[in-house]
Image 1: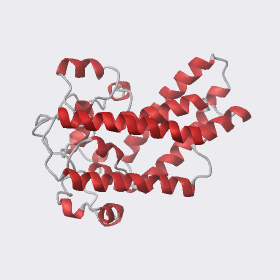
Image 2 (image 1 turned 90 degrees about the vertical axis):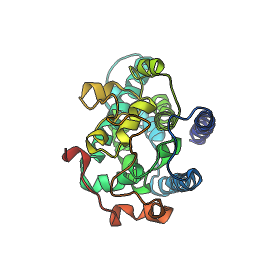
Image 3 (image 1 turned 30 degrees about the vertical axis):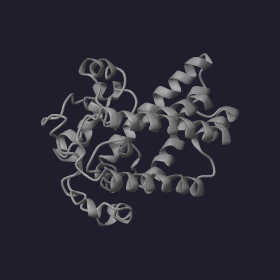
Image 4 (image 1 turned 90 degrees about the horizontal axis):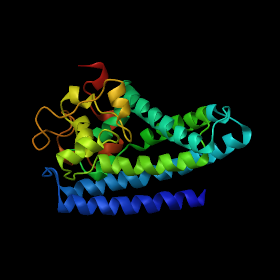
Length: 271
């Protein structure tokens, strides 16, 4: 699985670098908090997550996909369709799983407490897409492994999905300006920054929308799509109403936030 890690790291560095440059050249919004402080916190949190995964999980999704193929586990290993269709189906089904997982994290109080770390960011840029509590990553990995075992996607489908998920998470959270015409066309298929930014609004009914990471299909299909924020993209307030002091959003503060922080209104259960 060493090649998998190299592939993912290379894509991560390239996408991160490109988006960081575009955020400097053509930002969508003026940032309200210290960028250096936020980036330090977000990147440290990002660095902790692989440590938890390496220690706790003896096998990762791509490895499990190979094992499932060898032992004929999972739905896609039971049906006779071409390999290319299995790969495509695997990527799409895994994206549906992640959409569903995102909705669930907004629905169950104990999971929302973990997910609050992501939403507590006071600004919205590519590092927001990397800011997840280590315990949320652990829970997400468990769910992803279950999905791979149940669905039986090919190894290549898992690799494509993992690379796409990481890349689109940075892209959909990026603070880049995309012309409105291009944005309207792009969001017919994928999640754009303007589409996902609505999800990070401080207004609960907007937080409870646009849950997708890769494909915009799921939000439209399940009625969670919201086109624009009520206050407009340049004036909307990012984050959660109960976490407005950046001094408390340090690395130690975020790690204990699920325990000490006020979870407010679980978005999907309170309108």
